[in-house]
Structure formats: C-alpha cells, structure tokens
Length: 108
Image (cartoon, rainbow, N blue to C red; front, side, top):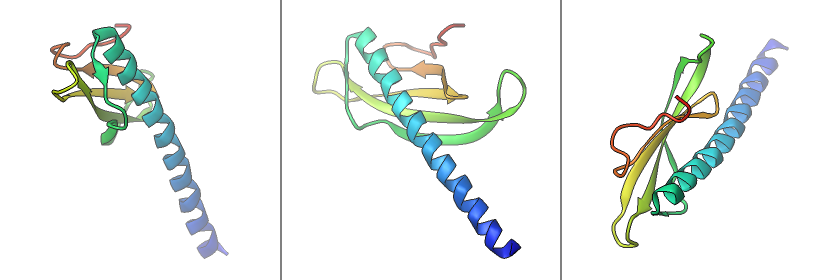
C-alpha cells in the first residue's frame, strides 16, 4: 500500500507547486506592468519568465521560496529592455530596470 501512496503524494506536491507558480507568475506580470506604467514605458505582454527559484528565508525565519522573474519593456516602441523582480512569500521583494538603476525595495 505504501508504494501507491508515495507517488500520489509526489503528484499532489507537484500539482501544488505548479498552482503556486502560476499564481506567482500572474502576480509578477501585474507588478511588472504597474512598474512600467509608473515609469511611462510600454510593458511587453507575454515576456514574464521565471529565471530562478530557490529556497530562502522569510522575515519570520522559516524556509520559503524565492522566485526571480525577468520581463521586457520598451521605452519607445522599438528598443527592447529587460527588467527583473524578486518575489518572497508571494510579495514583491525588489524590482530592477534600466530606468531604476539598482534595486527598488518597495515599502522599505
């Protein structure tokens, strides 16, 4: 019976991780879109992509996932530029674009 349970648990964990990643990507897209609007540049649809996912620490000290996303935008409709952002616990940790040298840390 245990040999049936282990693959089932792995399947449930994989489905949960997939579901969490879909939600995180949608949030990353909305954050990137809002940042581009604030900067007065054009956010390029369907360019948000997961670059890196790794374990990290939450502010409370527990282990959580850090997700780094890349996105593209255009200041003039011709040139493509790349931005990056990091999510920790499903919230924006930092965002970086050429128009914002360094990293912007919202709320801190």
